[in-house]
Image 1: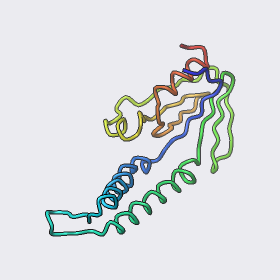
Image 2: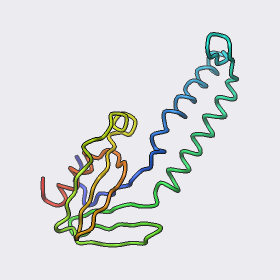
Image 3: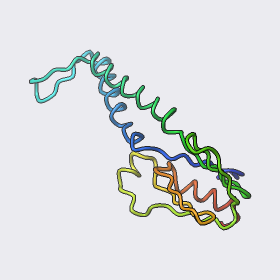
Image 4: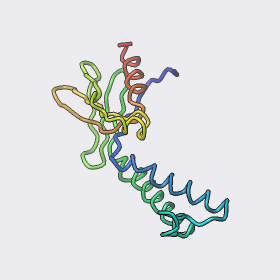
Length: 154
Protein backbone atom coordinates (compact mmCIF):
# COMPACT_ATOMS: atom_id res chain seq x y z
CA UNK A 1 0.00 0.00 0.00
CA UNK A 2 1.36 3.39 -1.01
CA UNK A 3 1.92 5.82 1.87
CA UNK A 4 -0.82 8.39 1.47
CA UNK A 5 -0.67 11.76 3.18
CA UNK A 6 -4.33 12.49 2.54
CA UNK A 7 -7.41 10.37 1.89
CA UNK A 8 -10.45 11.64 0.03
CA UNK A 9 -13.86 10.09 0.73
CA UNK A 10 -16.65 10.47 -1.80
CA UNK A 11 -20.12 9.33 -0.91
CA UNK A 12 -22.10 7.78 -3.74
CA UNK A 13 -25.83 7.62 -4.24
CA UNK A 14 -27.63 4.36 -4.96
CA UNK A 15 -27.44 5.26 -8.68
CA UNK A 16 -23.85 4.00 -8.62
CA UNK A 17 -25.16 0.44 -8.29
CA UNK A 18 -26.93 0.69 -11.66
CA UNK A 19 -23.72 -0.06 -13.57
CA UNK A 20 -24.66 -3.73 -14.27
CA UNK A 21 -27.70 -2.55 -16.26
CA UNK A 22 -25.81 -0.52 -18.85
CA UNK A 23 -22.76 -2.85 -18.80
CA UNK A 24 -24.94 -5.93 -19.37
CA UNK A 25 -26.92 -4.20 -22.10
CA UNK A 26 -23.77 -3.10 -23.92
CA UNK A 27 -22.28 -6.58 -23.58
CA UNK A 28 -25.39 -8.23 -25.02
CA UNK A 29 -25.62 -5.66 -27.81
CA UNK A 30 -21.92 -6.09 -28.61
CA UNK A 31 -22.29 -9.86 -28.83
CA UNK A 32 -25.33 -9.41 -31.09
CA UNK A 33 -23.38 -7.07 -33.40
CA UNK A 34 -20.38 -9.43 -33.54
CA UNK A 35 -22.47 -12.53 -34.30
CA UNK A 36 -24.93 -10.69 -36.54
CA UNK A 37 -27.89 -12.02 -34.54
CA UNK A 38 -30.91 -10.22 -33.18
CA UNK A 39 -31.73 -10.31 -29.48
CA UNK A 40 -34.60 -12.70 -28.82
CA UNK A 41 -36.47 -12.95 -25.53
CA UNK A 42 -38.85 -15.71 -24.45
CA UNK A 43 -37.94 -18.26 -27.15
CA UNK A 44 -38.72 -16.44 -30.40
CA UNK A 45 -41.80 -14.61 -29.15
CA UNK A 46 -40.13 -11.19 -28.78
CA UNK A 47 -37.25 -9.92 -30.88
CA UNK A 48 -35.45 -6.69 -30.02
CA UNK A 49 -33.26 -4.84 -32.46
CA UNK A 50 -29.59 -4.83 -31.47
CA UNK A 51 -29.54 -1.15 -32.44
CA UNK A 52 -32.29 -0.43 -29.93
CA UNK A 53 -30.46 -2.31 -27.16
CA UNK A 54 -27.26 -0.46 -28.02
CA UNK A 55 -29.04 2.91 -27.96
CA UNK A 56 -30.88 2.19 -24.70
CA UNK A 57 -27.74 0.88 -22.95
CA UNK A 58 -25.57 3.76 -24.19
CA UNK A 59 -28.19 6.28 -23.08
CA UNK A 60 -28.38 4.67 -19.64
CA UNK A 61 -24.56 4.73 -19.44
CA UNK A 62 -24.43 8.45 -20.31
CA UNK A 63 -27.11 9.31 -17.74
CA UNK A 64 -25.25 7.21 -15.14
CA UNK A 65 -21.91 8.84 -15.99
CA UNK A 66 -23.39 12.36 -15.87
CA UNK A 67 -25.01 11.58 -12.52
CA UNK A 68 -21.71 10.33 -11.08
CA UNK A 69 -19.64 13.17 -12.51
CA UNK A 70 -21.96 16.04 -11.60
CA UNK A 71 -24.65 15.19 -9.05
CA UNK A 72 -22.82 12.51 -7.11
CA UNK A 73 -19.72 14.58 -6.34
CA UNK A 74 -21.55 17.30 -4.46
CA UNK A 75 -19.77 16.38 -1.21
CA UNK A 76 -16.37 15.08 -0.27
CA UNK A 77 -14.18 14.67 2.78
CA UNK A 78 -10.41 15.27 2.79
CA UNK A 79 -8.62 13.71 5.75
CA UNK A 80 -4.95 14.25 6.63
CA UNK A 81 -2.96 14.01 9.84
CA UNK A 82 -3.94 17.49 11.03
CA UNK A 83 -7.33 18.34 9.58
CA UNK A 84 -10.58 16.97 8.25
CA UNK A 85 -12.17 19.12 5.58
CA UNK A 86 -15.80 18.68 4.53
CA UNK A 87 -16.43 20.22 1.11
CA UNK A 88 -20.06 20.57 0.08
CA UNK A 89 -21.44 22.50 -2.89
CA UNK A 90 -24.58 23.28 -0.89
CA UNK A 91 -23.13 23.88 2.57
CA UNK A 92 -19.70 25.27 1.72
CA UNK A 93 -16.44 24.17 3.31
CA UNK A 94 -15.86 23.34 6.96
CA UNK A 95 -12.60 22.31 8.53
CA UNK A 96 -12.12 20.38 11.75
CA UNK A 97 -9.05 19.32 13.71
CA UNK A 98 -8.34 15.63 13.06
CA UNK A 99 -7.54 15.02 16.72
CA UNK A 100 -10.34 13.15 18.47
CA UNK A 101 -12.09 12.07 15.26
CA UNK A 102 -13.89 8.71 15.45
CA UNK A 103 -14.46 6.74 12.24
CA UNK A 104 -16.46 3.57 11.75
CA UNK A 105 -18.20 1.82 8.90
CA UNK A 106 -21.56 0.13 8.57
CA UNK A 107 -21.49 -3.53 9.53
CA UNK A 108 -24.86 -4.41 8.07
CA UNK A 109 -23.70 -3.94 4.50
CA UNK A 110 -25.79 -6.11 2.19
CA UNK A 111 -23.92 -8.49 -0.10
CA UNK A 112 -24.93 -6.64 -3.31
CA UNK A 113 -23.20 -3.48 -2.10
CA UNK A 114 -19.97 -5.42 -1.74
CA UNK A 115 -20.31 -7.22 -5.06
CA UNK A 116 -21.73 -4.41 -7.17
CA UNK A 117 -20.22 -1.54 -5.22
CA UNK A 118 -16.58 -2.58 -5.10
CA UNK A 119 -16.47 -2.97 -1.34
CA UNK A 120 -18.81 -0.07 -0.58
CA UNK A 121 -20.11 0.73 2.88
CA UNK A 122 -21.25 3.78 4.80
CA UNK A 123 -18.64 5.63 6.84
CA UNK A 124 -19.68 7.29 10.07
CA UNK A 125 -17.63 10.26 11.24
CA UNK A 126 -17.88 11.77 14.71
CA UNK A 127 -15.85 14.92 15.08
CA UNK A 128 -16.10 17.77 17.56
CA UNK A 129 -19.50 16.56 18.77
CA UNK A 130 -21.04 16.33 15.31
CA UNK A 131 -22.06 13.13 13.53
CA UNK A 132 -21.83 12.66 9.76
CA UNK A 133 -22.59 9.78 7.43
CA UNK A 134 -20.80 9.36 4.12
CA UNK A 135 -22.93 6.96 2.08
CA UNK A 136 -21.59 4.18 -0.12
CA UNK A 137 -17.86 4.87 0.07
CA UNK A 138 -16.10 2.59 -2.40
CA UNK A 139 -13.20 0.38 -1.23
CA UNK A 140 -14.03 1.37 2.34
CA UNK A 141 -11.69 -1.03 4.12
CA UNK A 142 -8.67 0.24 2.21
CA UNK A 143 -9.68 3.86 2.80
CA UNK A 144 -10.09 3.31 6.55
CA UNK A 145 -6.71 1.55 6.76
CA UNK A 146 -5.09 4.49 4.97
CA UNK A 147 -6.74 6.96 7.35
CA UNK A 148 -5.60 4.94 10.37
CA UNK A 149 -2.02 4.97 9.02
CA UNK A 150 -2.16 8.73 8.43
CA UNK A 151 -3.42 9.34 11.95
CA UNK A 152 -0.81 6.99 13.41
CA UNK A 153 -3.37 4.43 14.60
CA UNK A 154 -2.22 1.43 12.55
